Image 1 (spheres, rainbow, N blue to C red):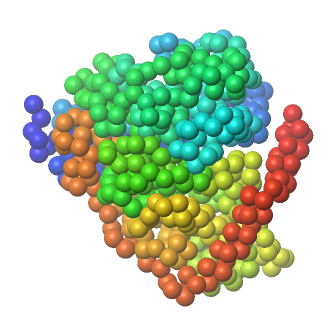
Image 2: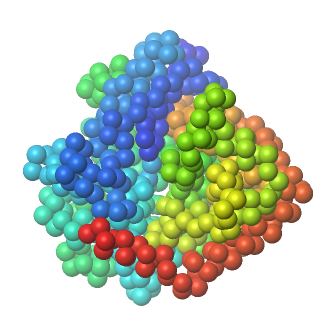
Image 3: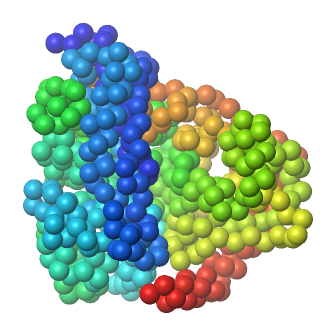
Length: 555
């Protein structure tokens, strides 16, 4: 039996480009070792793996499921080695995943992309969260639910996203019916990886609720699905038929094969899967009403718990116990944040800036941050819309696109870089105000994720939102959050609140608003809202028309 003082858990965070494992001491949450494994295939948005002849259309984003297994085989043993840990001391493992990241499988969980008959079919692969090609289906999913007066629609702010399970599944059915017929399970990757580790398929309550529209114990009705498409009537009955597992409970223990992959033993308890954003709330001490956590990376997800149930326009869902038991868990988000900064650096920065960065031994992001930080608020004369990956909240429309206003021949790369940071901050402020205006108080803002390391980003967000930013004292929020859930599933703590109190940690008031800057940002935010109204709310569909023209040109 493991000495309780030496007990360890492993949290594994499956992100957009890589998977990270962290070894955590149960008694105090100390992170004693970690490792990262980059996915060999990354994001498939151009063509299928090793098949440049199988080009993908616009707005597709796929992944290869075998890359996730390699994280178990590589990152977990490396993290254990880095920690100097005795595998016998590990009592639990838990995982989190981007969502909705979903794949079709056979009855035994084999991904259809692993079968020779389907390896050259795009719909056989994992659809990553940012696969937005199902927007036409999402429009129909929302429109039909509104027409039928489906009560579950209110739990999702009145709009269903193309990122979620129903729209993505409907796209497969309508574009590759043969493959759909071969699909036995429509599986969240969060649940698939647990299935591979334990041999048990259980759908976690978080993704089922937020991404699968599992409301008050049931999915939408067969009659509703039949109205979408007669061949879709049995979607829930035949493709989503698995038990629902509550967060922080055990899905099973490691199989011999999985234990061998990870360098662990078969007595290790594996927790039910979870979502990377939602799992980050407990280590940030966001287990009480009013504490919003912004998980800032390639995208930003905003999650919080509340003791009130309200309809918030464009929210990604409100689920009972969706984050912690006994409270309503709310989700909203922005589809592009770090991704937008990365796009700008890759495509809009001249070689002279790269040379300057190299001469200063700086990363190009660090150089642009340094240059942009020297500017007074508003000095660049720009305003931008942060919709390069569409708008997740509050408009829930992935046909929308990015905008710059105010560019002149004097505009510099640092101008544009700062304007994009500000645009994403404005997007977060809009989400916060939407919650408050809907009767869900947001009293604290806690930040985690990779972007918390950028001081300019953090100060701008504090100034724009007029809120102090509390910061999770960890570079690995989701993995640490998974570790907390592993500790609960293994019985080390009675519930996630107790685990959070012992293992979580937050730096209070890490960044505080500057009043003079905040006042200037109020004026810029008003301009941002004007653009949101013009392009997103009042029927100007130029962005959709341009998307249509592009698709036709590339077809």
